[in-house]
Image (cartoon, rainbow, N blue to C red):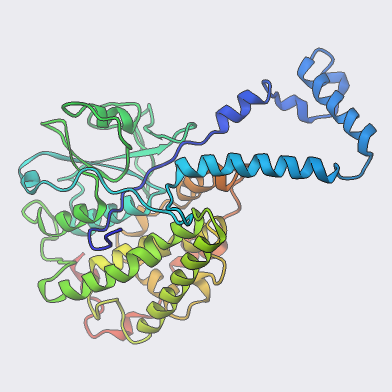
Length: 406
């Protein structure tokens, strides 16, 4: 995959949970309680009790025989591989290969009325929200926030959202569609591909302008300055472009996409390669940040934004669900304070909805978490902890410049 082009849209993938329930013969919650007095008329419960009694008769309190365990394990593994092949396309070695973005930025987009579609769990969409906020484009580019539907699709709320301190799922504020797939299909000629976020929409032409996240943040940074409240903030200055691109070439494949390559690996070999690349890169960045406030010195850049949206999810999701378990981000001397430093920039924290992030991963990625149980949020991921002083502003003589501009 060409890392320079940074193909980085995010798809909330379909969970087969509904199908599983259908195959379970209309499972009723009452089936899981051994209370015959309340279930005399439940044929499903009687069937479950019959299976339970036969199991006790055959094996008593012991585990089922090895041949049954092996059969079930083989069946589950085969089913898992089928689901993973749809959830996360892979190469012959089992390594995850991210699909390319379908719609790249049209240079004429600046002359149109724009609307941004995002999903809060998605790190690729998150970067567009941060740049939009830092540049002060909230009025120029309104946003609709899709939530995760029961079938794994991006869905909108059917009631108007209220004002909140952080972003929450909303209704479709421009097209009044029920889900993101319907929005994509409004474009001329329709669309049957992946309905991914982020997506920049041309309101007047009813057309997808772009669904490639890096194209969008570059455009927000420099293409809409006449509409921005903070046009003087440049997150990709000419003198740093080459350095930003060098960092992107390192961070995208090994960290941004690297956590997904760990979580979506379909072979031990693919996982070992991905996890090695991930942590060797994190170690390298941690060393670099020991003498530099940001990746490119004293100035916050797009490279920092792209790294931040992965780091803020690391201990929350990736460390556990994606098996990125070698180290927690909290264990890094410089990376964690660096993440907190960016989190504390005005308007950034408001783009981080941690419960939505956890739900989007733990409850919707069924093959990785079949029980859909969301673990308790780590205390180090709560707002109060992340708001502790990072003390990194002392590393830079112009360290307060970003916050002054905002």
